[in-house]
Amino acid sequence: MLGKSLASPLLTFGSATPFCFSTADLATAKPNIAPFNVNFSNGLPQDVLRGARSTNLSPKKWVIHSTAQIENLTLSDEDRKTWDACRQALSAFNLSVEEEDKILGKAFGQFHSPYWGEERKREVPKFEIVNEVLDYLRGLSLSDDDICKLLKKFPEVLGCGLEHELKSNVQILEKEWGIKGKSLRNLLLRNPKVLGYNVDCKGDCMAQCTRCWVRF
Image (cartoon, rainbow, N blue to C red):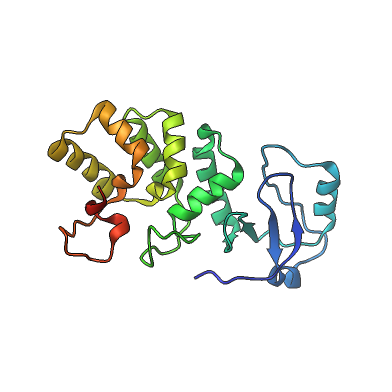
């Protein structure tokens, strides 16, 4: 589990997600390091850029402070690049940076989600996995606007198994209930969690209600 660290100083860039560095980085920072590059959609004020350049901070780690979550997410520089790539995969849906972080964090166990319970291990999302799930959803005749609504209601869908959950469940809906096409689209917008069901207790509770077909 990623440890929590005291973060100072805190740099806030407009409405974007605030970034800061841990005290461990401050202790090992060397003077006159080259400035690191981070892309922000709205750009940065020059006074903030000057302040960032004048501060002796190591670029090795960065922290996301989500306004919607208590937990702080600390990533290595390599993982940050992977995270940013996954943000790019979500860019078609006109989500804010905070919404993108929340979706990715909940999908991959970085932020708490009752949907996973205690079973989900924290991991950094992979661009290929995120992109495959999004492509599959588009293949179900869901528009980008539909997918945006689905992600907001059920962000964990990005962390569900493509073959053994998403595809399998869509096949079950079609074969057992004849739900496909427009009916499937309407169902997924109303109850997208059906994509992640992987348990059928058949009335004998298995204490996995968030992922059980009994809710269908």
